[in-house]
Amino acid sequence: MYKKAQVNTIDLIIAVSLFFVLILSFILIWDNYAKKLDEKVKYDNIAEKAIKITDVLVNTHGIPDDWETDSENVQIIGLTSNARIVSDNKLEEFVNLDYNFIKQNFNIEAFDFYLKVVDSNNKIIQIDDDNVEIGIKPSLDSEDVITIQRIIARGGTEVVLEFTLWK
Amino acid sequence: MKKAQIGLEAIFIIGIVLIIFFFILGYGFDKRNDIRNSERFILQQDECFKISNLIIGAFINGNGTEIRINLEYTANTLPNSRLININDKTDVTCTIPINAFSQTNLNSGNIRVYNQGDFVLIENV
Image 1 (cartoon, rainbow over the protein chains, first blue to last red):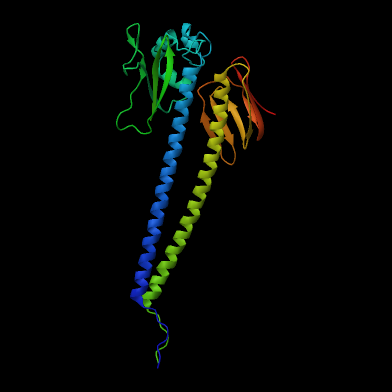
Image 2: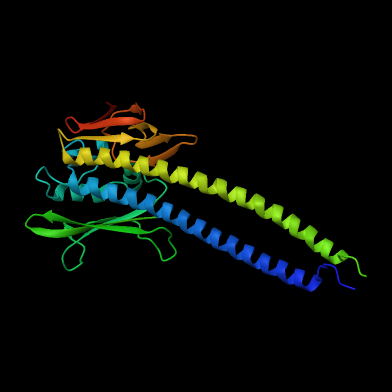
């Protein structure tokens, strides 16, 4: 007498359980990577915006050239004079602009920003006794915070323009 | 002699395994679609960043700057809303912090980005 093939129920349950554990692990790892990819895409998007805004600020004089004399009609905000040196007049006018107007001008209505210009001692520079800073600082709970620092020439010295874009 | 047998519980387990297998199959198809959509979105977003970078680059570098590049997708440049729009099955949009560029509908292929008096012209060539 011989025994024909039979299914051992306990073996089957163990095999099926192991299969489920593996599949579940696979799904969790997959989801984790998908979330990381989404975060990277979001980060790249905000980084691109911040880099372009600082590029325009520190490398152009804006449109019109002398927008600081009539800041309500500024089309593009740039902070340099023609010699590609930051203009005190433009800086002063820039920090006096309406926060929401600047966001609209940079097309970053969905975000908040904070901008300051600091000297080599990391102290905010002043023009006519006013600090050169504008915007809202991110809190510890803020998501997607990116800060771009650009060294710019101001008179005979170098200062750092720090632009933080956050959500 | 004992004939080959299978317990009722085994049939039950196999049934559950089959149900879960189909669930996983569906999940796999769903994820595959997600990945394809993500891939398409990332490629379009890269193209969008490429065009906006070219426009910013031409604007910053001043009058006379000319850049030529190949586009993979059709695109629209929208200066009034400061947007670049990349068209495919779905549209992907990215922002640009300047408005001194031409409003253009671009076909895929070679494009020319040219700064003429601090105004950036974009056209197919």
